[in-house]
Length: 428
Image 1 (cartoon, rainbow, N blue to C red):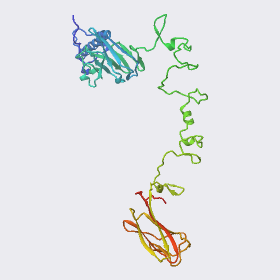
Image 2: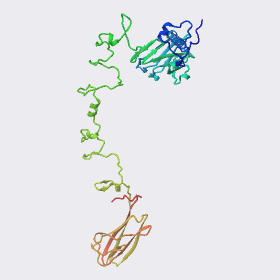
Image 3: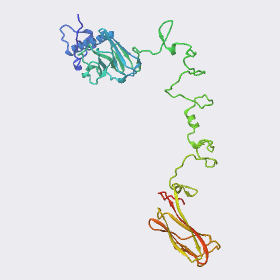
Image 4: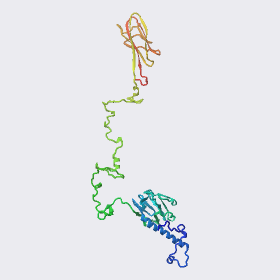
């Protein structure tokens, strides 16, 4: 005989139609010719249905499903909190299937009378079950939170009630276990660190059951009260406390390092020392500046504007000389000499000197004129007037006349020019 496909579901939608008989009626049962009320019969048949579900879950599901987690699961009376996925492991044909309630869904909150119901996914492994807010839309590979009275049994083969809350208790129909608020659910927890007992082969708690924990049984660890040699590098993920150091090997606190460190240059000692040979020392002799300096306009040294000395100046001089001898013959001359190639901004000069043969001075009837300046008595060396610029040439007019004295008068003339096109910074 095959397994029935449907549960004897009866009167699970309208609680008012279910009335529990009194204890006296339960004691006597039906009497001959009695016609039982419909509400009594509904209550009785509904209990047949509920117990069928319960026994099916115990007999069928418990045999084929294992529930486990790699970390502790706790129940506080309202919430189920877990630190890693809750795994449901069951067999489907020749395959072992794993469905999981992902860690991302922790904690799971259940109100009184609510259940966590899921539909197993038998197609692949592992399958993370997806939360479905609407129980009416629950599909394969999903779980939902719903009032137990709203459960339907359209698919009892794949639908599984994993947790059920009654008051502050948590029931697991799969195992027939009940947990109270504050309990730890260690179902199938994977222990990550156990010592084996050679005598019994069981697992025991390292900190509670073993003796000699104060011995140095683990040379691979660094002892906190003894000197050790660390051969590898350490990375700290949490704060390590230091101390105010009194030895060079001490691990100092951040506060001590901050107070002992100097970040301001002016707080250093020895600032007056000549530690920077690459700089010019203001009070040191014998230094050589090996590179050129560029000064901004208006920079002064000892009151002298450096910018007026920063221009290349080329000075050209064009000079001609002419000797003139007068021998008591009342002779005179009026000559013009020209220098071309300069402009009006250039500096033209001319001068005359007395080189008399037997007299150091001109007499009153002897004159020498350059331009418009006349010198009647020539003594030594004199400047004579200013030449004339004609627009293209500098012209030097030299007029001489002799009286009774024999004289030789020598003169020169010339033009000085600044060839630099930038004349704003000409030398002083």
